[in-house]
Length: 434
Image (cartoon, rainbow, N blue to C red; front, side, top):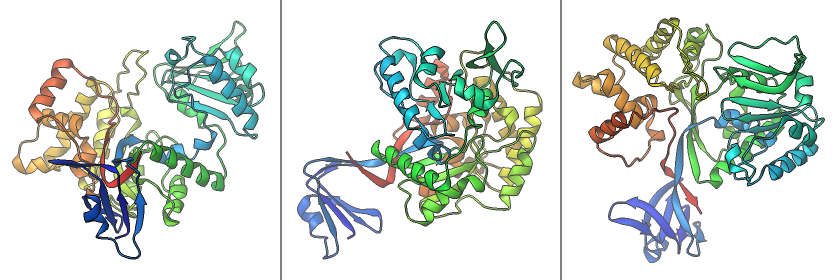
C-alpha cells in the first residue's frame, strides 16, 4: 500500500457503512476502508502511515463550473473581501495591498463579496478607493453589473472625456464629461471583462506560483477536481501553457477537465474547426484533460447575467451561428457546455440541439428514439448536457438526486431559472482532510 490513514473519522459514502476509521490508498486510488486493525494489516515496509488523531476525512469535492486555469494566472494579484465584516476593514486591506503591489500591476477585487456583508451596508465610494490607493491602479468588480476604477487605473487606460462608451456598456461621467471611474454593464458584462483584460499579466514564473497558490486555496475548501469552463481572453493553446507545465512537472493538486471557449465574435466556427484538428476530448494526462467545447460557443448566444438590466434579446443570427458550431461538434463526437441564463435563451438553444439531433444523434437516449426538447432540458438541469452525456469517465461524479420526474416537476412548478451549472459533488478519486 502507498498510504494508510488510521484512527480517524472517514466519510465513505458506502450505503450501510457511512463511516470508517481507516483507509488505504494504492496507486493513487482508494483501495480499502475499514477498521484500524484490518487496514493496518495491509501495510508493507514502504507504506506511509498517518495517524489522523480522530480528524475527519471526506471525499474530495468536484466543482463542475470553475475558471481555474484563467483565475490561477492572476490569483496572486487578487484582494479577497470574502467574509470581511466592515467596509472600513475592506478599505484598509485595499490600502495595504496597493502598497505591496509592484508597478505596473493592478490591485484586483473580483467576486466573493457584496455591500450587504458590511456593517455599513453600502458600497465603497470612488473617493474612498482613491484615498486608499492613490497611485496603484485598482479594479473592483461588483457582481456582473458594475466596476469601480480609481484615478490611477483611468490614467493607465487612457480614459478621458473623448473615450466613447463601448458596445453594451456605460462609462459614468461627471458634469464636465470626464469619466468618474464607475463602469456600468448595460446590458452586458462585456465592458467589465474587456477592461480588466487590459491590465498587465504576470511573468511566467509568477503565473506558475500564482496558479499553485490558487489550487492550494481550492484544496483548502476540499476541492480536488474541477471542470474548467474556459473564458474570454483564454486562448488555446498558448494560455494553457502554465497549467500544462505544472502538470508536466507533477505540481497539479487538482484534476482539471477543461473546455475550449470561442474567443472572437464571428470566428467561432473557425476556432472549433482548428481545435478539432489539434486535440480531442480525453486527450491529456490523469490530471489535465480536454473535456470539450464551451462554455461560450458563439458570442451571439451570450445572454450574460446582469439581473439589474432587462433580459437581453439574442439576435436572430444566433440560431445560424450556434447551429453551425453544434453540428460541427456533434459530428466530431465532441461534448459541449453552454452558458445559459434565461428561460427564453434555453428554449432557443434546445431547439437548435433538437435540429442537429435529427441528423446527428447527440445523446445516448437516442437509441431509444425518445429524445425531446423537454428531456434534453431535464438532463441539462440535472447533470449538464456536455458533462453528463459525453464527459469522460475519469471525470465522473457521484450525485444524490430525486427521481427524474419529481425533480423536473419541481423545477417547472417553481419556474427555477438556471444560471451556470455549478455543484459540489463527491470526487470519487480524491480525499480531503479537514
